[in-house]
Structures are given as structure tokens and as C-alpha cells.
Amino acid sequence: MYKIQTLNKIDAEGLQVFPTDNYEISNEISNPDAIVLRSFSMHDMEIPQSVKAIARAGAGVNNIPIAKCTEKGIVVFNTPGANANGVKELVIAGLLLASRDLIGGVQWAKTLVEEGDKVPALVEKGKANFGGFEIKGKTLAVIGLGAIGVLVANSAQSLGMNVIGYDPYISIDHAWNLHHDIIRAFGVESMLSKADFITLQIPLMAETKGFINSDKIKLMKNGVKILNFARGELVNDSDLLSALETGKVGAYLTDFPNAELLKSNKVIAIPHLGASTNESEVNCAIMAAEQIRNFFENGNIRNSVNFPAAELERNNGARLLVTNKNVPNIISQITTILAQAGINIDNMLNKNKGDIAYNIIDASTSSLSEELVDKVAAIEGVFMVRTLNAR
Image: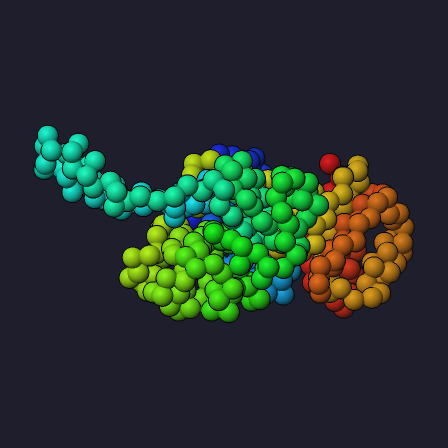
């Protein structure tokens, strides 16, 4: 029986992925094997020693202490792409809000509630105060061409925008999905000076914190509109507010309001609604649950932010799963222990990511003894060993 602790309300359809005969799920559970969460901050949390996996029902993992988890051998999963369409649609809405003063117009129209029959005439007289421009023919710079960035770029192109995309780490799959008319930039600086709109679709990391700052703003067109539906810390707020005040930046749309940003009437602040759709919550929960289940039942790792991707089809024998430091001579020690026990290896996969190596070893036996597991666990550099019996 695997114990799953939830730290946020997780969609029930996603939790149904876990069979009730083999999984116990609760928000209050002792010694959980895995944790599933959304936005709950784990940085000040004492993570139980029993935890082997954490799944974030969403793409961002800045609420999880990744380094600490890696040191403990805990696999951290996220769900890239599960909420991509929900965020994409909000970005498209942001483009329209930035080009036409829809919010101002709606708010003004509400003030006419007591005017009775005069309302139609007052509307015709006042509408000129809320004019704007169309996005068709304007240039959009998409910084980051992951699951969301590709959807945004393709949708904007289909709306008649000129789209420039930049991502030095674009995957082959995402590149294939990108519309052929989208121009790929080979540097951020070259695209900033051409863009009427700039949207950020990159993850928050040490090297991307404050990505939009005074130096990059100087390269932009006067009156440029900046959209940030990725992470608030990607933008240096002080530099941005100064640019808004001078008119260098015409508007800033963000899904991450704070007290300082709310003071500016050129900031359109949305209360973190990017993935707040029923569909996104369901998709994220299902993907998170499926990844946890696949890890426990097969030892496979998909969409981990700190462990290598590793998937091997099960055979009829037992499976040995080993996490270790990515250093020489560990594999040979594991295979020697198996050989000494008279166990053949039917199939094997070794993957690494930075300092972490992960091994899936299928053995020609129905089960592996505690003695053998203890010997593997005693190898210097090994910090997690799991076994799965034959199915």
C-alpha cells in the first residue's frame, strides 16, 4: 500500500488514477511515500524520510526545495503542457487587453447605470476615450518556446501577427509543432527592438531572475507592451515601473500582482489565473498522478525536474531501481553483486542528469532478497534502492 499525501486540494478526477486497493490518499497522512501538491510552499517544511517522490500539479516548481529533494534522492515531477492551453488563452486575452482599453471601457460603462434612457447616447459620446488598435500586423516576440510558448506563437500567428520566437533550448518536438511562418531568433537582443508586444514563457531559475531589466528595456521600442504569465520574478519591478512612468513601456500585463505594481495605472494585474480553468486543473492532476503511479509500479521517470528521464518496458522478472551519485565504478559493483547471487540481467537502463544517476535493472528472478538490496545500498555513492517483484 502506497501512501500519498496531498498538500493542496487536488482534482478528484486526477486522484482516481490511484487504485484504492493499493493507494491511500489523504491531506493528513504520516510517513507518506509521495506528495502531490499545487502551490503549497514546501521550503519551510520538514520532508519525511519516507518520501520518495513529489509531484507538482503544474509546471512551475519554485515552491519545492529541489536541491534538498535531490540530496535525499526524492524524484520531483511536474506536469509541463497539462495547463498549456489555459495559459495560452490568457496570454491571447492579454494581447487584446493591452491593445484596447477594454477594462477601462467596461468600468466606465458601469458608471452610467443611473442614466436611464441617456445611456446609449452617452456611450456613443464617450467611447472615443477607450479606443485602441488591432493586433493583426503587429509583431510579437515570444521568449521561450516550450509547451506554452509554442501554443502562444501559433495562435498569435493565426490571428495575423508577425511572430518572432526565441529559445536556445527548444526541443525537437516543440520545434516540429511550431508554425513554419514563425521567425526563429538566435538572440534576445535582436528581437526586442522589433517587437510591439513581448511575452515571457520561460521558467524561473537563478539565471532568469530579473530577465527583463533596464538594459533589455533600453533595446525595446517606445511604448512596447510586456506580458508576463510565467513568473513574477522574471521582471525587475523597479526597472519596469520606471519605464512605465517614462512611457518607454506602454503597458505591463502580469499574472503575478504585488503591492508596488498595483499602484501603477499602466499595469494590468490579473490574480494568477493562468492555469485556473477546470480543464487545466483536471489535466495537471491526472498527469501528476499518472507519473507517480508509473514511478512506483514500474520505476519509470517522466517529466522530472531533478532526475533523468528513464523509461524501460517491464519484463516478467523483478526490477531493481538504484539512485546514485554520477561517479565511475558504481554500475560494475551492482552487476557484481547480482552475478555473485547467480542472477542474470535481462535488461538495463542507466541515465544521468548532472550529479544524479538512475538505474533500472530487470533481473531473471521473480524477487530480490533483502540481503542483496542491503549490499547494493551499502555501495558508496548509492542513496536509494527499491525493488519491484515480478508482476
